[in-house]
Amino acid sequence: MRQHMLNGWLVAALIALVCLLGITAYMEVRKDLPRVACMRDHAVAGRRAAQPENCSTACCGSTAPSA
Image 1 (cartoon, rainbow, N blue to C red):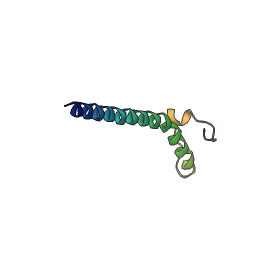
Image 2 (image 1 turned 45 degrees about the vertical axis):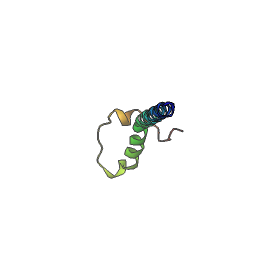
Image 3 (image 1 turned 90 degrees about the vertical axis):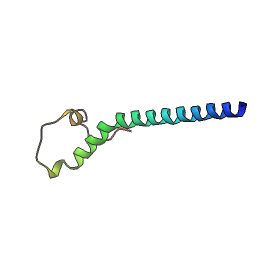
Image 4 (image 1 turned 30 degrees about the vertical axis):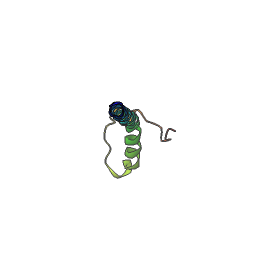
């Protein structure tokens, strides 16, 4: 009986760990998305017609990527 209860707690801890890792990865990707979109826009800027700046390209006026 005790082994069954410990296995249940172990499974619950593993599920919680996977959820926390997923949330952390999502937040990091979400935080980095505007920089990646800005770098992509600079790469294709010469091939398309000029468009008004939106908030994702207006915030990154410098061409140097951030570390």
